[in-house]
Image 1: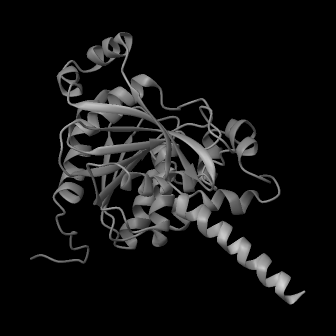
Image 2: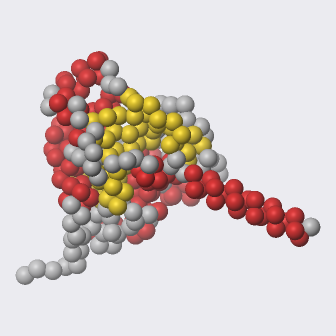
Length: 318
């Protein structure tokens, strides 16, 4: 009986170990050629991108996370060399907000054109991937597994990794910073930071989103919402990862009050953080989109590409 128990425990351990070791492994990889219609859309949005995209290659991938097959994308410079990396986290839930060809070409392609290897996940249960997303639950592993995915990309320098996300993707970014210190910098656009505050402004979210994807939501509501709200654990986020938070003051999807509350917590904990509130801007900061990209590139270049030292967060000066 004792030997049988030992064998059972060893098999469980081995299974868990092998599952963890496989996280991030690419099992399918297919080149993505942007269609003419996609190129037309990108040209209308930013004509300068067309020339830049000639030096970028895209791939659809299937990778492993907790033994599940997850769908994702790679955008990277064609040139040989060693390039810093960015993990990009999509917003939305389910089909809403998932990566499509235009988003991959324009957004991931733009970051890659700055000289970065970019990877992104659709999260489990989406776009043909296995499992069920939990909007900040076990699907966080789909983001963290991408760290290992980068190890499989020939021109990726995994000693220099940044992470970014918008809206729900911002929440995923905050959660990732709670789990690891591997990221040299993080950029968040209108990141969901207080689920309780969110429900005050958007009560429909409870029935239409949270209850549908968060396991045992009504039974464990307070616990699950706090687990997804960075304002309650701002002190747990890695302090060696500087954060740039950008927000539109006229954002109705994720109110600026959420990011402002988090900002005050990060300031109190002396976390390296920079905050930009764009006056009158919407959820996507459409009115200041060019400035958003300038600030994003500058922040990543400074901390991820060039590995500049962290700022002195103690009170100082004359």
